[in-house]
Amino acid sequence: MVQAQSKMLTLEEFLKLPETKPASEYINGQIIPKPMPQGKHSRIQGEFVAAINAVVKLKKIACAFPELRCTFGGRSTIPDIAVFVWNRIPCDENGEIANAFSLAPDWTIEILSPDQSQTKVTKNILHCLRHETLIGWLIDPEEKAVLVYRPQQEIEIFDEPDALLPAPSFVSELNLTVKDLFAWLVL
Amino acid sequence: MVQAQSKMLTLEEFLKLPETKPASEYINGQIIPKPMPQGKHSRIQGEFVAAINAVVKLKKIACAFPELRCTFGGRSTIPDIAVFVWNRIPCDENGEIANAFSLAPDWTIEILSPDQSQTKVTKNILHCLRHETLIGWLIDPEEKAVLVYRPQQEIEIFDEPDALLPAPSFVSELNLTVKDLFAWLVL
Image (tube, rainbow over all chains, first blue to last red; front, side):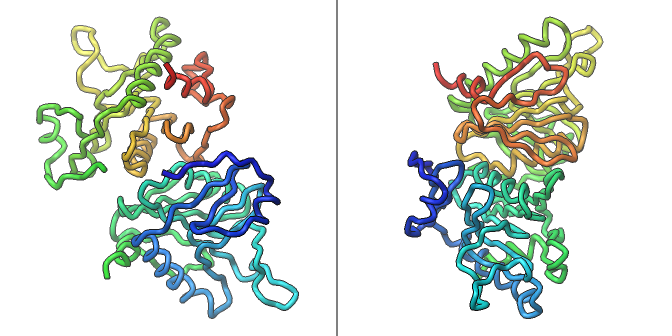
């Protein structure tokens, strides 16, 4: 169980702290460590980042980032996968990808870990939707289901193996079914 | 962890089986036992049923039922609390409350148990919303949060102690805050 610590730091103070393993998120003044990634989480994260980037990165449409700290709206959270369309990826003066991402991803993807609070993860997705995120996925490896969140809409749950998962329009070539996604769990 | 059994019975065959403890739900052809209720679950369920009925039962506006089997839309599920407005409560030929409820509650309330799949519970709430249910609550005692689901709307999460929880209009006198709800956990 992830336990909230009761250190009250400002967001600015929190961001100056060294990064830890597992990384911590800053939510409503509290520092909350993410769960240590385990096998299923790691596998889906790795395969999914590669699958998204295979269809959007070379064409400079978008880029998927694993474990990227995103700081906006008074919180600093780390989606398991954050996808940004190309022209929203922040760069520094050298034209390189910036280190600090102070904006919401276009697509946020969370992969539920055993014993992780699904309510906490859901709150992080809603925080994204209240900013600029178009769509949030919550992948439940145990239930083989994907919960899809969009602003101002009822959530949708996809668990039929052949159901096509609704990716945002800029990744329309992804064509990923529920079965495809959870097939990554099998070596 | 709740495990799905692989008995494939029809809904009619399932409904003829004797009730078990814990009770089982029939979802997409599978028989899924509910978790055995534990202390926090039991306490919130008992207090909440009493609180709702205190404002609506005597006036014959509505009635809250704990652990009532509701069979509709091809599933047979058991909300932790099912609230029906008075004129939708089914009666038998003697004018008594019927045993079989073949309709969706107006308000469905689920209380998350430790190790229960929040995705499974969320699916049951969405099933209700696709039928006649106006509002669904998912109470997370661990996180001291209430997730509120309404048809065609983005979910809302209430976790500020003084936040007034959105009850359906027929229970407008309830005036329950997050703090009030979780105060029931303290003797």
